[in-house]
Length: 293
Length: 236
Image 1 (tube, rainbow over the protein chains, first blue to last red):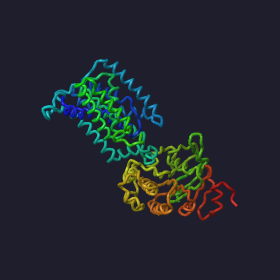
Image 2 (spheres, rainbow over the protein chains, first blue to last red):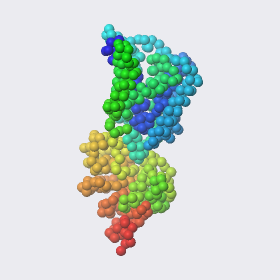
Image 3 (cartoon, one colour):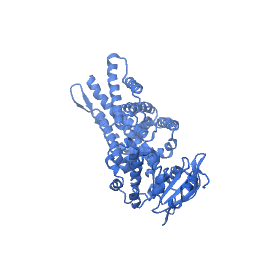
Image 4 (cartoon, rainbow over the protein chains, first blue to last red):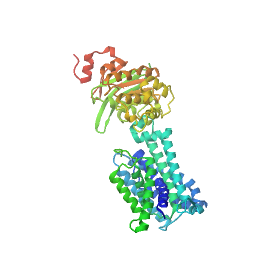
């Protein structure tokens, strides 16, 4: 694979990372909530798609019509009755509760679906690609993933900047007490934010499942990639999340090229190294504001 | 005039610290009442309790005849109560125009629109597209008042109206008050500047260490009465 093709594949892979990271970025941006179960939720969504496709005999893309609303509803309810109790000046309760939820999800998936790897069969789209040049081809599935990520982020950005609900989200992010003075129910905002966060991670999980195989314990890696994309792009910045995802994807794809030539580094390790470099030299991320944590 | 706000025996505080003791206060519809008092007298706590940000530990508050203490903070706006908070507390990630629009979040019907706010507070107009984060103290205060008016309040609670502002700016802000009252809004102001409070209010209430130490019409009190109520000294 040429360097140019590796770069194109890296950008496309970045779409998946951006989808993983969107919900993390949104929930952190609005309520400073760190969800350590985020990766496990993506895997849970992929398994829900496995069950839905089997039960209804439909394509995994069609199963999104069931999986995304179910996950969104789950996010709303969890935030309302569990996560909201952990929000406060001390981040530890939220971290402990979501870590615990992640363990519960992993074990429940292991119990119900076994440790065998699964995949989602979306048909011909998985293999088809557009040949740009002799050495560069763009797969339909990675392209669809990237387009979905961009569409989700544009949609969220428009919602946040142009709508009454979006302004309520931003007001709550800025100052929840003053937001209440405007008639905004900050707990209601938190629940809606978590519903959106779960919906986007459900999308990410199903795309992950179509792209390759997955097992119950894979959520940890998903969480790590999501966090890396958020931190590289800048905490709480939606466009930063997209750019962070793409940069992480590029680092992994180009890192794989190095690996192929010299057998030194794997792409994943290259991504981690880039993440460490950003943390060391620009801890607020590329689009984050210094001091806003 | 009908009573809009009826506070009886109100106590409130922060954790173990009690800031208000048995406060009684009545505000009639259309009236402008100023709350004065030294730092730490409980003025802001009174307003924050009325707005729902501080939980009352005793007493009753009736607003337009209804029990206000049972209503959560975010629903009090829909009931017609708006607070211009101490420190202005604009939303820094938003423009001035967006701050005004957030003020109308509760969609309470009434006469206040962006155009009317700009009419009463013309100094906001050139700032509309600017980030709320880069405004001067007076500009922030004007936007905070405009934002509160956008909720079409029956009662506007204006905390620390002139704190930290130049006299000329304070005058421009108080120039807006007749327009606010004309719009049908009753105003309860917390003001450190006693002269300003006496000039604009129909009635003045002084708090001393969380208790009402004086309640009178400006024409009925002299400097000694106010000094005594303000500092807790015996009036000559």
